[in-house]
Length: 334
Ligand code: SAM
Ligand code: SF4
Image (cartoon, rainbow, N blue to C red):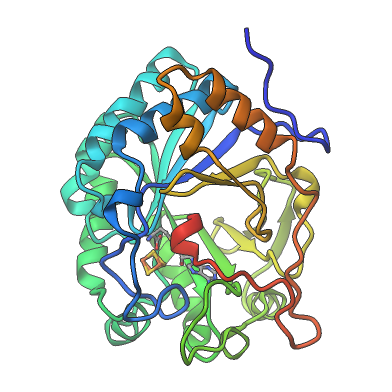
């Protein structure tokens, strides 16, 4: 039996987030420019290569796979990949197969995803105002996403909503979003906007709405209790007594969650990022393509994990974006 992946800070790596494409059918203002240049298709791992890589991680003790992007559901043939990964659920080696999606293709794929053993999906919805939704996502349309969410629920999937907290954009919808999620039975997680990518004409600091402020606004209407739930990631959770729901806050910029980090991120070109906020990465595509045997690939994975950094350097505190990353979330996988 192979030894599990343990990094130099004694953290077991059990969670892999995989970006299966850098492409998307939306152009969210905080994520991409409108004229985003995507990678040439030849750069991308094939679905078979993604299968081999993910299966190697599962063989090394990864128990949770989150498929993301770009928009994972716009990748051609993506259901073949979900179907292939479901075999690891059947053996019990993989405990959870899930995805983060903008919801645009969920109406089409929800039933098949459920059939592949997916139990939960995260859907990104920053606003319930259709005009605002179109402004934020540029190419997205809210009714299509709401139909997708309905289809996911009908297929028996649990839907969690992710909303990026945007100053002056969805601040006024805080209670609307909370109540809508409570009524629909969705957990809700707010994400602080992160300094990713190089945004022509967009300033992350202008959009930065600290979740400490969002939490303070929640206390004006609800009784909040801190929950001890930890998922090994940057989220912390609150219970709202009045609605009974769990609200997550992802504050990578203001809270140190790195000690319990259990995850690494694989890009669609086979780069393994050990930390969302660091440039350190390992190329797994070369060992993957060098040999049909997985020995070199497994060695490269172990070597990469041995270099997982202790934490990240994001810092908005001095009104500068120290530790700003030049890559986009759609590349690393949010
Ligand atoms: N396309 C899918 C979606 O939108 O859910 C999956 C990929 S997207 C990169 C994953 C998550 O990252 C989304 O919830 C999105 O809102 C979030 N995200 C993108 N850019 C971000 C940024 N600059 N700061 C914080 N969150 C961001
Ligand atoms: Fe696409 Fe998701 Fe980025 Fe929006 S956040 S542009 S939906 S990848």
